[in-house]
Every structure is written in structure tokens, then in C-alpha cells.
Image (tube, rainbow, N blue to C red):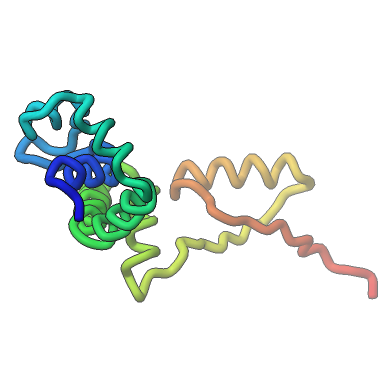
Length: 147
């Protein structure tokens, strides 16, 4: 059976000192935790020494916290960033993971080429400015063969 101080310190270690409150997400220092608990900082170190399987308890609590409110908060923040659309990688990652109808953005572009590779690259650059970035491209030799 753990004391209140031991439980608080195990929980604090499990969350890495990161707390969510009305001001958002922030780091809580061990001194602040000690002040809230009404103990000295050294009380936590003594509590830790009195628990032989301290790190096993921390790992267990981390799993419990991770599978509950922290994971929900992570998804909430990720979703809010995704819908802001200010970072396409975040938006695409969210859609890729949570939209069952998501399809990778691909666009096939066919070009009529001039005499060589330089013409092909210039044409591709020109069109990419018109339609945005090209995700995938393929150069096909369309010249007739002597078969």
C-alpha cells in the first residue's frame, strides 16, 4: 500500500511532470508538486527509495494514463491542428489515420515532349507552378519504334 506522497510521486513521474490544466499544457516542477502536497522535495526521494519496484509502478501508471485522458487529449490537439489546415502534413496524417475513405494524393500528368530531357523538365516545372507540387511523375518515350 502506497502513501499519498508515494502515489503522487509515482503519478508525477508517470506523466513526466507534464500536466493539463485551465492554462493548457505545461510542465510542473517537483518543487511545485511538493508545495501542493505540503511536503519537502526530499520527501519524494525518500518515498521513491521506500518503493522497491518504483519504476515498474511508474511504467504501469504510464500505461493507464496513456490509454485514457492523455491519449484523448493528444487526439484532440492533433485533430484541432489538422482542421486548421495550416500544416498539410498534420492534416494529411490525421486523414490517413482516421478517414476510412482516405486516398493518397496522386495525379498522373502526361506531357508532349520536345527534343529532350531539358524540354521535359522545363515543361514539368511550368505545369507544377500552374497546378501545385507534382507528387509522382513518369517520363515515357512515345516515339515510334522501328519494329
